[in-house]
Length: 288
Image (cartoon, rainbow, N blue to C red; front, top):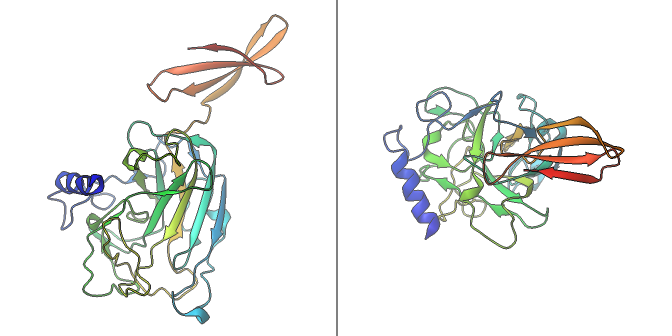
C-alpha cells in the first residue's frame, strides 16, 4: 500500500513532463540528475566486487560480459571507464565511511548512457543497500515502459518512464536515491549504510528471463545485449550524506596530551560536532 501511494505521489509530481510520470532526462526542466562534478558529493566507492552475468540470459555459450574491470567503478565518475555486468550481473561497493538518511538524496549512481532529449540509450539496474554487508534492501523501482514489444538491443528509452532505477540518466549524470524511500526494517540501519549493490535488469519481456518492478510489472530494457559490454555499465557511486570527517587538524596540547579534532556533520541537524583525540587515538573531549 505504501509503495502504491508513493508511486501515485511521484506520478502527480511529474505530470506534464514528456509522456511518462517521472522526472525527465538530464538537461531537461525538472530533471533530478546530479552532474558528476557537483559539490554535493563527499565520498566515492573505494572498493568494488563484481559477479558478471551472461551476455544473454538463457544462452550458456554466449559467455560472460567482460568489458572493463571492477576498479573502474571506484572513485569519481569517469565514463567511459566502466565495468559491464551482463544479464543479472551484480556489483557490490564499499566506501570510506558509512552514509546515512539525511536531507534530500543520499547518494547517486552513474552509468554511461548516451543521447539527448527525452529519449536516450539507457541500460537499467536495481539498487540495494546494506548496513552489515549481508542483508540488502532494494529500492522500490517503477517502470512504465510499454511491454507489448521487446525493446531492441540499441533502442532508446524515455527517462520519464522509470523511477528508482540506476541508468535512468546519461553518462556524467547521477541518478539520485533517497534512503527515506526504503521501508523500515530491523535488518537495515538507514543511519549507517556501508554497502551499495547494483543488480542488472534483464530487459527481456519473455517471462522465462524477465525482471520486474516493485509493482510486479515487466521492465522492458534493450535486449538482448550479447556482446562484451552487455548489460549495465557501472561508472561510479557518489555519496552525499556521508559520515566521513570533513576535517582533521591539530588543536594544540592540554595536560601533556597532543590533541587533534575531527569535524563531523550532524545527522539530525545541520550542526557540526567537534571530537578531540590524543596522539594515540584516544577520545579526549567532545564539544557540541
